[in-house]
Length: 491
Image (tube, rainbow, N blue to C red):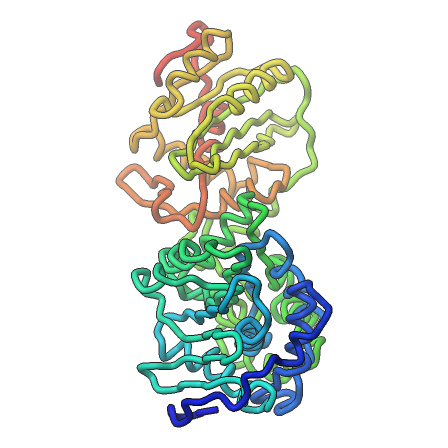
């Protein structure tokens, strides 16, 4: 095997390898057996010895290599053995039996140099330490032609940059590796996904740590998952500290970092890190948290402020109820927020959120029926909506007797509504049921300031904010009810 150059050009052994004689057919079980038998740790804990997979690593491999999975993402803090695990999976994939012909295992990072340094060179080192692998392969390490070639199955593994044009010509299988997905643009992820799927088994496998920037593929995929976009072929796993856990508590560290309990991460390193690093950096890189910062509309402590408003209050049948409706644009969610005055005068709110269809189209049928059901259950006072997208459904419901109210999303109309909602939230005049998706959409919002106050910007925000817009409309109408004489009108 050539390491550090391209010296040898002939394979020492083209015979069928011993793992081809294994009776086990399940890909995950084969991968785990192969890794723990033939992949030797190139550095650090257990250097030179066959890898010992921790329980959380075995469980993740079983999840991502199960039937029907096409895309798999793992978010975890630093120090969890990400690069070693990805390298081991790449080595297994290029050496093992594959029903769809010659394996092709690309390793994608921001640049080829980064892909080599983080994962590819680790894989080369693993191969060099195991004779059963090294004599059956040639490892090219020149920067212009880095690739692992396996003789008996014609498999190849190579580093590649995240350039979308270069990714679309690939034909990966059984896996493709994406390193540090938290630093990859969503366009690169999409290009890799589009390149896959040509074989019966082809999984795009990505691992990453949250970063300071949220304009990346990991953030986008995580937000979609949390918003309920969970197709059967997509696997998402996250190791992170609970949002309300104390970052200084070592129990919080263990909850976020399974490698601590597995024995290959040292708690002393974390003690030093929290003493010497900005707290926000420690939370991001060592606890796996996405730190909101100070740009959220509810401020740096927005999650705490919103969380304090959670209540188990139950809405009362036939009681006066206000409704806000935000029908999403293409790829957006649709949200309906409704609420009632509690005996103490606070406005208790509940949200119902719909995901867009697979073709990204908007179907108002379900929200319309939900509004009819609300009208049967409660005494609806006003249902505020943006006529730009809900004009026809709004008119139809008004004809059926629902108290529909047009509320255009203009700066003049919505800026005061958002300012009033902000004041109600920080003053504790609103409560909510604690629904995770509802809370996330409220906390996602980023303000765009103007001479009248501010708007909530969908383009700048960290994720979907449709529930925040619906809440603002509902709160506005509960504060300033329109005359009852007209069933539908423009404000």
